[in-house]
Image (cartoon, rainbow, N blue to C red):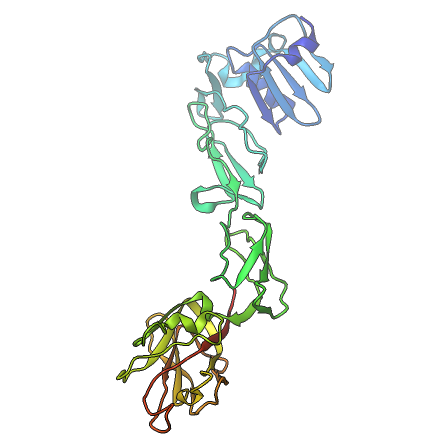
Length: 365
């Protein structure tokens, strides 16, 4: 058997970052080790159970040698120690020698990580470092330490790394849409406002962060939120139901019933938004019924906050704007009041609305 053939045979131990003397003695202290190869540039030590008649030979950057050519005095206190095939003799100055389990094999690790170089003796530890776009699922760690155990195996050897996943980004209550199926670090999704909404000119980009969360997105989409909501009113006359105020048609109107002293109309926007203003359109024949109007806004469980008040009365088919200012936010928007004793259009108190637009936005963060 040639030296070339021997180097190509399967070795039973591989150690990195050691000296040639350490490599030779590691073979001497093993009963089943008959030869070793040492690479002078990479400091790699390979141990074999092959034997032959070769002395020290240099080939392919390795120094190869049969261990029987080396004197036993290199073993020191281990000269008389007989260990089993799966053990090696370990000597400690001043305390004698003892048999320990052979070192662990060179650990394997993912392509998405790097490993600290070192020895593989029992008790030795190695650090595995995961690349930036991956984590170890247990604890979302980026570094894991493995230890060579007495049975010749590594603990945590089944640990694996997975891509940092931010999950599917929300469409933010329907006011924006995004393109791209990106969900992992450091991928980016692109948001844009829907056609009926206007943008503040922000970049619209949102990046998946190292911690698995979506980054800040400075994009504001402003538009009419009411059509997305669920409408209701205090009472209904005939077929003039509450959702007529958000159907986009100016000739279909809501109407509360006779004798209703509460007279309110409301829309649940399904989520919390910043409300800028509410635009209300009066009827084409009895615009004067749109008077003494209070617009209120409130979030999930907090008391209502008055957005604004319109005294009126309005003209026929007039669009009335109630400005809410800059610090009013909520999920529920209510329009209440309407009607007053007077002429034939206002001789009874009705709330009669032909269209309600709730203008607002949600700043995505």
